[in-house]
Length: 476
Image (cartoon, one colour):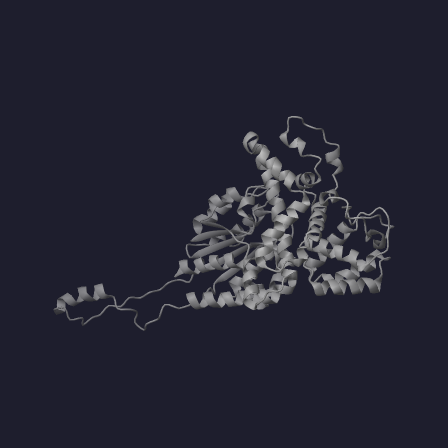
């Protein structure tokens, strides 16, 4: 298929071509519901396609619901319409003959790879030239997004109606993308070339993860659950980063319901007696002098400190969505865990507890993302936390860190993490990435987990609820 945002000849525009852009936005993790799509089509028809800036602003007004989505939309719009400044989007939104070519022909080969010297001894050399392999290896996000959206259209992923159909559509999309070439290479390398096998498998897993995300988003947008309970069950199993904006109200209700159940289970207070409970052993010993008659009963006095929770959340990039739901869940449990302090970081770290004490959770999260979103630097964040709050961490403190441990090749300051573990009752690290991706690329997760008491994959509501449930059970 020809690349839909790099046409060679301008043609008349239509709502069909604008729908391709809507699919591209979903591939960029920008939630676009059917209602949003209709509004965007109407806006485009009113504004026309000749003025690029006017069209961009008009579509942004209908599709971007927050400042973060606006930034992501503007980047996606510019990425989709990569054209000369004197060319209008009317020339970029055009149709092609899309039936004669396989999907992965929509992935261009990067110029630097075309010019790269060939290594005859490299077992992966035979795969180079395959458009899908080249795009995965070079991390060409634009090409991969276009190819995945093309595959989604080819297999009609919008027709998904049941949660159990995810696997079928993932397989169909992988076949449409031409993933069988990578699969065949992995089989060939499995015995003879272990290093090449691992490299190919890592790329296959990255592709499968992206395709699975796309299918889940399609399910949320297009599937009509037969009952409310079925949709709630489905939402609790989906990756929180894939939750569509239109489902946020339902998800918030689901979080509140789960929090109420946990609060009912763990919120029973140790009953307070005026003089404490009877200390039987001490009373019997004191009664020896009075022939066993307990004239002077002794009472137990129980003073148990409430545990303190410190939640440290990475709010950079796609991890921000998971941090948002963790904070929503924790603050829904304030009757059970009143001593909660929250910290947010991308590079610099700061305490945001006051925001959650004075503002609604959603508004507080929005302000946190605006202030602390950006490029990730775990080393700097841990250094900031050490200066700000490490002295207050003790054996009644549970530290919860949520992040993917991807540190852009910088020093993650594991020495500080080790000191935090030594001071705290528990150091729990929650990673929204699949465990299969830990240690790949710039991930420091394999090193990080040696300095934590508990390390868990946590990317859906069920996993989060189980972890919080265990945390509450441990404190009883």
